[in-house]
Image 1 (cartoon, rainbow, N blue to C red):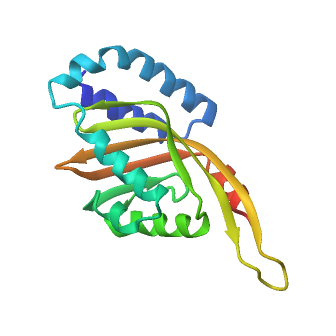
Image 2 (cartoon, one colour):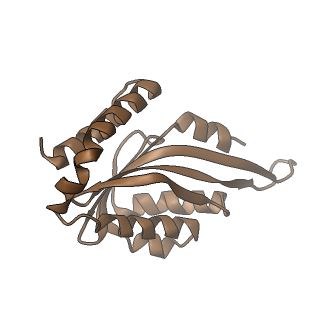
Length: 181
């Protein structure tokens, strides 16, 4: 089975309607089976070109730099997030999320856990997102600051130095609970 097919089969499993635990077990098993062969297989298709683009994208989030994030995205990027539960098209859909979350969580830090798996312009990596959500005063209530910490995984495709596909998987209920005000 070609590397590309294996990689996208991982994403299909992640987006299935399985429980979170089963989904994580399946991902771990598939990654464990695939990763030992990844360096040899990836060498054939120019490995290492996608990760620098994703690092720039993550740095843009961490610096609340919307323009820098935009510079890493294809105009026709396909974006999926477990919060939205449906794919959206176009860089503006991604930038709206960047603006919303960096505005709500000004000290946001998005960091990679472990090492990304990369093959042929496609990446899979686990991450942790953290910071303090700032809720302004409203309806006679004082302003509130609430810690946010979330782990997840992303699948990314990069072509010609731009992100063309981005899929973020995380526990959306945990995120909603932490951002409830």
